Length: 195
Image 1 (cartoon, rainbow, N blue to C red):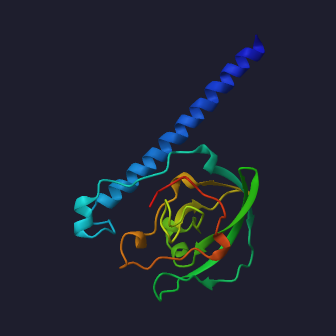
Image 2: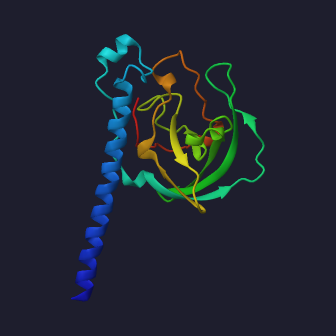
Image 3: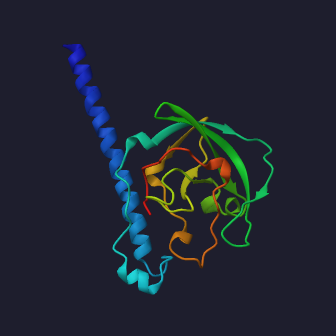
């Protein structure tokens, strides 16, 4: 009887966690769509803005919300990240995330912008640009981004369901960081925003 009760409680907890995750992703998607519909914030041209009905996303998949081992890189050497223009902003590899998807281990570099970290609002912001096997097929050719926060310990949560496109996917007027080759995943990340 106790075992059955425990299993019922566990099932309820897992179901609740799953629903909370789904709700947070839907909120993220709605916020992103509203931002693009706002003429003051949108990267879309006036013509595109009139025709914009909303973003298209892969189905929410909890497989792509992962807990990664986070290794902080001390005394990282700053470098100029390549962009789609001649602009080369200064970043550093803040840490390395190691994780498993479909029983395979992968690593991604997580970056910190030198200019953003001087601003109070963004001082804890980390940047994860990546490419994967969906690029040019069902997602933007140039890769996608995920915004993260500096973790308190040695675990960082990466939710690919929150992957979004750089502004360059919508207009050539922007200068967007190009995901470094070290952050190319040889698998299809079928989560987050689509092409």
